[in-house]
Image (cartoon, rainbow, N blue to C red; front, side):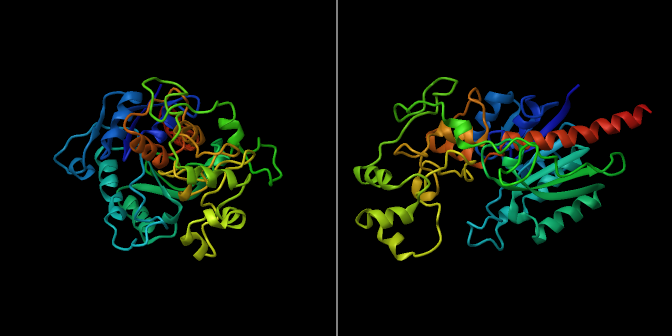
Length: 359
């Protein structure tokens, strides 16, 4: 038996993959999804079926629009309004998009909902408003900050997760999910965090500079055409190094704005480490000046395929769109391993309800 799933602000479908694919969690079937990003919706359709729509969620949250009933609603209302990278957070309209999300939860009579967002959501007034609004329509809530690497993703990515359940018919879940992996610094019987080496070491050097029209590991494993200055800078950065090493070893190659900025930005122009999980993969991972996105030893940024693997996407997951659009989908995704861990919590409480009903 599979439970029905609706994904709001679905993006490419990283969390849906965690809920529907048995390699991560499984036990759910996607019946409807919505996102405002056309290329992301095409990716979702390609991988999960032709039931995703590209539209404004507020049109669908109104009482006049019919939606199918579902067992669970998942989704991540756009996070930029909470992000520390957004310097004008107060009053950002994206902070309020959880309201139509909860409207759809209520309309579809979902038994469980899951909201995923940046870790700064926890402790915010919006977090308290979400939980109180959920309580008013009959849902209990629990929330925590989860680290994707604790659940098998080769990436240190911390995300806030709120899980809500119909308290009149379901028991409270065991939350957060039990970890499947642990930091090497911890004394634990669990397997150690998966590393960059585990995820990408077996890939050959990339070829070409464009997406290939195929489905597999090499469709996204392409390079860039860096300037000679960029190539010189790449060669200077040592293993595990960053922009401060570039400044120390080759000040003549270092942008003046970096030289003037004496602190902060220790990941800028940095190399990933082979034997650690990657840093958080963001939407411009192909630009080393944006973060620690240089290959651990090759003199180049990571490729789209390498970024997708570091996010946890299997090679047969097909992305649609331009290079920039695909990069945005990868960087905005929920790691499927994290989605799978959450799906197991949801499946457990839904199956508990079934057992109680049968009794």
